[in-house]
Image (tube, rainbow over all chains, first blue to last red):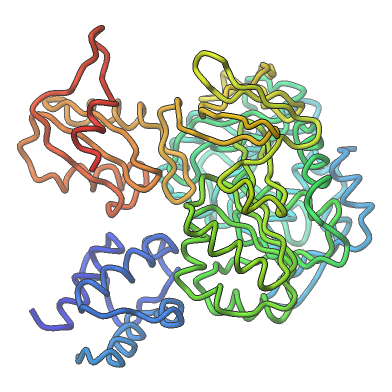
Length: 79
Length: 461
């Protein structure tokens, strides 16, 4: 599985959302499925999937799928 | 005129601020002449709210009328809205998410308030005392409402104002939904005695919330345990908030580690931290722990609020509460709206002990509920619905430490994920907190009742 596939699968699972809806443009709170509850699930699932420890500030900054990629790059995950 | 409205209208410092535009308005400007909504017959209104200024204006206009209002989340799924409206047949609906509602006509009450009015008059009566209906379980679509009177609200507001340091120079962010009892109590107490209220639709996981917090120099923050977990995870306690004066916590037991973390934060930053206890059936609040006892009486729910009183049942150890803020019964459809009967004491469903100094401690739970992310989930209801949906299988449900919904299932051949997906779509429970265990048989007690204790011992690890 490529990192992009892994990212989409993690989003889809944490947000209980069809993988086809996980696009770069998707943002926090733009759909009912991405709320504060699923966001915290998402953060811990991303940490598990990519074996990283996400910084406190990044938890809030991860406000879109595109942002998630950008932030994960800081942790040496390449897309 | 409503006593709450009189108090809020007399509060000259009260300003509702829309952080998006920076505009502010007082309560009097929001109110259309009450004749616009008043009718000879008392009716039910469904208000689907967020925390925006327009939702607040809708709330006050209905509160100012002679009708009863059910406060609901505007982000509730449409199918839940439909089923609630079928059960309750509200005469009025306020919902900015919809352009039209079948069987209703849209009417403009004033420049900023549009509502739907039923074309046919509902044929049921609404009890004189009934003022507010609150859901017991947030956005899960459960039809069970708590019936509250204005007297309940007035009484609880006054008790809360006796101990919380609410004052006219305050700036209060509405970070909890106002359709939720705790959020409503923050909103009403501050409308009565506070100052600026920041009507935000942003949450604590959004940068805008924190930039507004800074910009308006907010003085308090309220949260259920889940909010405190999130604050901790996002580094709140490592920052400084110069304007922050006090914080409150309610809506379930905060774990000991976070009690320590936030007590320390409070001490370091000269913030008062109030741990409180209550439930929707008591309007909101029943007790609080004064901040000076945070360490000495750690994990205590403190003492009853002014005007309230606790007792512990000597046999079951159930915590019982007496006070004017106790509700007037549940409603499950419009048929229950013609009654309002307060029964004392309130059976909290929690077990408690009291120490020699009069501080109460919750020791367990009798009521079959689990609180997930601050939302109350009725375990018997979940069990019943699962047994109906998958009738070839048998189910047993319990909660683990308000963290997990544990579902035991016998004779289920399909993928277990079907069960979590079903619970998610039906009750909006996030699958990450659902744990499913296949069982050989449902454990029973000697008198053939489901043995939840045994089930927890076997599978609750």
